[in-house]
Amino acid sequence: MAERLAYIKLQPARVLDASPALGASAELLRLAYPGAEMLWHETDAALAAQAAQSRALNWWRKLRGASVGQVSALPLKPEVDLLWSNMALHASADLPALLGAWQASVAVDGFIMFSCLGPDSFIELRSLYARNGWGRPAPDWWDMHDIGDLVLKAGFADPVMDQERLRLTWASPESLLADLRALGGNLAPTRFPGLRGRAWRQRLLTELDTLRDAEGRLVLTLELVFGHAFKAAPRLTVAAETHVSVDAMRATLRKGRTGG
Image 1 (tube, rainbow, N blue to C red):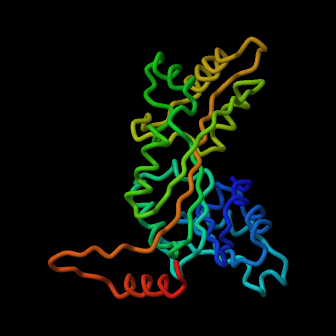
Image 2 (image 1 turned 30 degrees about the vertical axis):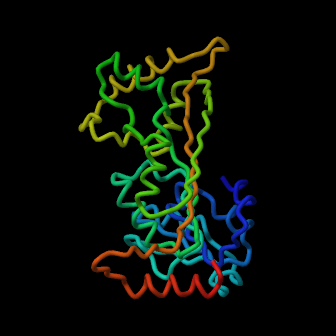
């Protein structure tokens, strides 16, 4: 995702890394925009502590305010020019509300960039769970086109969406399961509500062993969805009675002075 920043001409002065503990993008963003103010945001206190530790900076960067973190609900003020979210969107329980909060956090003419898991991720696990009557191994993640529609409804403009599939392999069921847990575990609302036990875990490992390909490697498919969009100035509609906020009027006037 960081490679795509080279195609965007805007040089943001303020960058917000949303859910940095999962995205691990701090260094890439600093390299892309060395002069920008770097902000980060986590809603979970445990993840915020992890993000703060991973973003430990040397003393002169701290004095420059190069990394400012916050644990709270979005939107954040002041507005940012780039809101970045790497591999976290799929964990949101209310995607429309989250995108609305993003829209309120981004300045006019700023942009968002994000990546997340798509609905074809771990399709091999879905059939494995289904034939054993274990329910769903993962939530029903949003399709790329549906996310693009939600981005538009949230008030962003010109969304660009694409996706790619990766084929991941492991040598053993134990290593595969460890990596799945590192990704966050099963967030499906219909997952088994209790603890499965050791016998079930051993059966799971046995079932995972059936996913081997012709070369003897365990295989899972991962679908990655990428997107970016810009925040355009609000449009003033004419009606019999029109209500326009002061902030909307100011944004429109500023854009008019700059010739946008």
